[in-house]
Length: 317
Ligand SMILES: [Zn+2]
Ligand SMILES: [Zn+2]
Image (cartoon, rainbow, N blue to C red; front, side, top):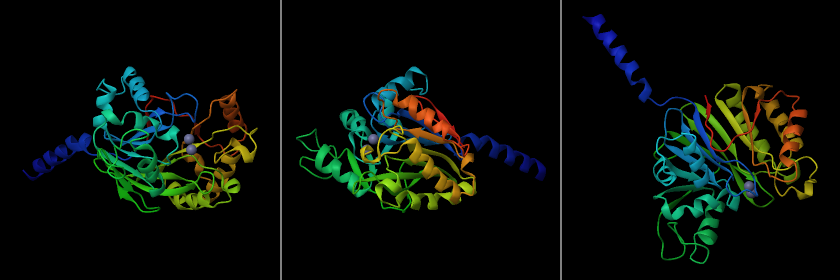
């Protein structure tokens, strides 16, 4: 009798398993480039593995990315507008540059009410520049009247983790330097005890005369040592031929590798266990080919370098 009970109980637990949230992440890039092609600009859907309640990290492109994902049968729903309305639960914006916000602004009329998370400096731009009646319409919950209250501004505080409503995810923001004194953000996303790091646009510490990246590397290195960091998304916008004074707060292959060396030191050589996704390549005459070649040539640390593709599924766990 007793044994039967335990067998039944275990069976019950196993049957629950698919419903239980799992460690790790599902990521669907809606846009991956750093300029020019307005149908493919930085925007990443992230959900806890086993869930389809997404957050949207940066929002340069939304509609086109969803349309392409539908064509590839990534969603069971086939209308991009419905997917945006129902499956994107909130937005996290690293900084307010248009290549990270245009998709959110352009698609705001058909979206449903949700939270918009960002540093105060980022939310100010939405409030004072984009969601105004001269530039568009005030879809925010603050600022110029009449206030449509579609998006609720949620201020992030550096280093403080908060839960992201209607998902299993949490976020801790870190400030980045994107041409001093302008700020960008790195988001450390947590699902249970697994983590994902996404960096918005950033310059290298040596160029920005900053220690923001160094601080970030120190903070996340323990997660590499404990095998909890499942991936890093970081930008390389230009190839090595662009002089430092013309980088405008971006990385080159050389500067990325210098930063990764620093992180790898803190992680005692284990950085090559973490997949690295290089984002925000700026299309120009042969730039993308050059960036990939130069990263490969400089990869003495045997890092696992990948390039996210628009409308694909990346599973990290
Ligand atoms: Zn950008
Ligand atoms: Zn930018």
